[in-house]
Image (cartoon, rainbow, N blue to C red; front, top):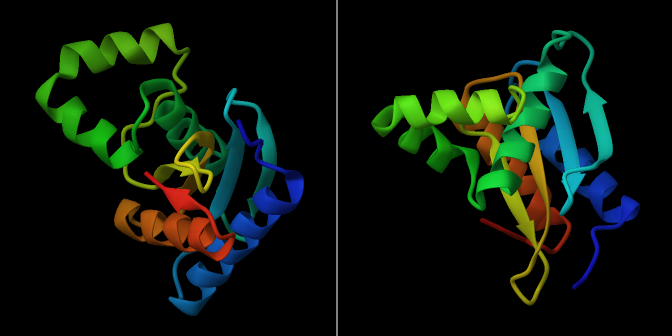
Length: 141
């Protein structure tokens, strides 16, 4: 399995933030994790609130934990609130079911990490996450 490198994680983060500035979004926070859920890179733009780290990390960590993006987490949470309440407990609150978290895949389609973004509307966070992954030459799910 390929590993997500610091250079790749930095490129993803910087491209995601650049997309946010291009779109004139609210200040963003970006967390990129490796496949084991360990933080590789975190950046918080000036003006982003202090809780943004926890939200961005939770979007990425939840995506890794469940094997799909946080948009799908949000969809499933609406349909199964009791199950997702239990997931919040067992994960120590690290699952954030809101768009903005995506899995990062290598060219062979293997999961090598995840990104989570918080700061604007979830749909906009997700657009920036996708832009970051694509700019690094990787795939998203």
